[in-house]
Image (cartoon, rainbow, N blue to C red; front, top):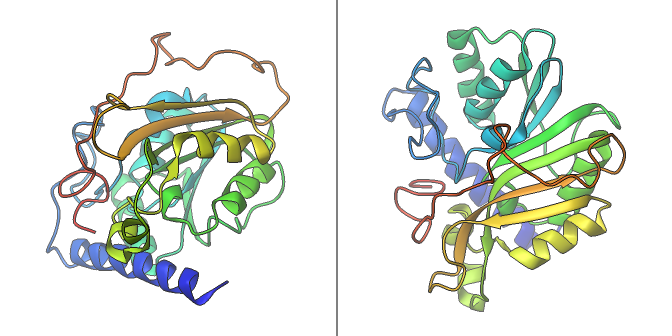
Length: 270
């Protein structure tokens, strides 16, 4: 890893570690991002979210499935996924930040989610066996990685044949300046590290995925470079190969547009 990559990872870890310490100390609560989630009333306020979408809403999770959440943070998406996969299913949250893992463990005890576990690790080197999960989800995290091909390759590796990659993330719809891309604060805020939507899809295909779809929020022709997006892809195999991506209800995916992805939006106050 280069010094620059190490610096970027440190900035991201410090930003999220600070937020987790504030929540653990009772200095920051307020619940989850209500514009993305409608089923969180029973969760404690310490289950905070810094995401840019709701990957669980599009994942169509089934009882008994094993789900991996990349960059699981305080555990919100893990707890929602756990409801859907039920007692026969399993949810694994992966995070690199000790403070976030401590917050997630505290939240797990509050929620009583016995089918959820949290592990420390990097999303570029997932500490799981090959073909061991059915679904990979993630919420506004992959854009923070300095080695996205490694993330996509690892996600492909741990998915079973026919397994689903279904994440919320930030993508670019136009080019950005070198200064924007090199700004560490923007990187920790889910902006300068984002891939162009076409590059995101191309890298997933290069990793071996098929049925790749990147659905972007709002008018991609507008002025802002960044958009929230829902990204779907499958590992080849299984009965659903080639099928279109739809909500479990059968409705097409519709996203809420985010203006600028700073302030109260993605990765709030990172």
